Image (cartoon, rainbow, N blue to C red):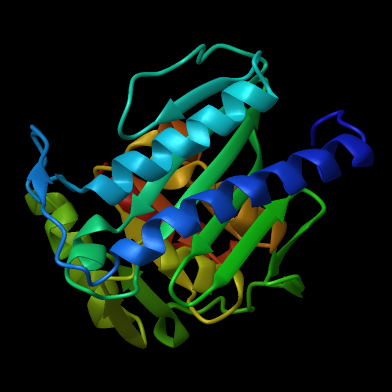
Length: 266
């Protein structure tokens, strides 16, 4: 819990909403428009496509932050870090789920996180096409202004499991865990990207495991999940924002059950 006042948090939440509005206005006209695709150099097995929509929306958000909060830092997917050790630092992913965006599928979103003294305190997940906006702080989480909560699901055989891309489970040990979770959970859903975390926070999904993440992939989602009553950590139990491999659970009991399986595959 940060020592910021309610007034300060209200101001920061309002500004984060402005950032989301700005990105949404840029991204929406590009959706299903046949825009060109570039490929960033990467060691990832799943590739890293990028479009004008990614770059233009992040640039616009960065400009707004710099003009409104010149002392704040910015870390983003598409451009170099700016003052990343600042007391307040924004972490931006303009389009999480670029492959879905390119394919004309609405399973993508803009992620806007704010860290205070190196800890995530505010997160926004905005889905421009469906017009869904999740906001999370220590005071709670909401979807389009209405409070949301994770659901109670302590048993693996009753859990809805989400994985964006099976190729994230890259090693033989990770593949074994992945196959076990698919086999023992009630059902498995692929391709959710950041939207799956929003659904976990709102009680529709119970378990998510992902690998090969960057800070901007998870930072904004941490306050949303925790504010809704869920748990999100690295596979070894450490802070999610410092981990490339992440587990999120709506029910803390389910997290305690699944975490030991992932520790052996980390």
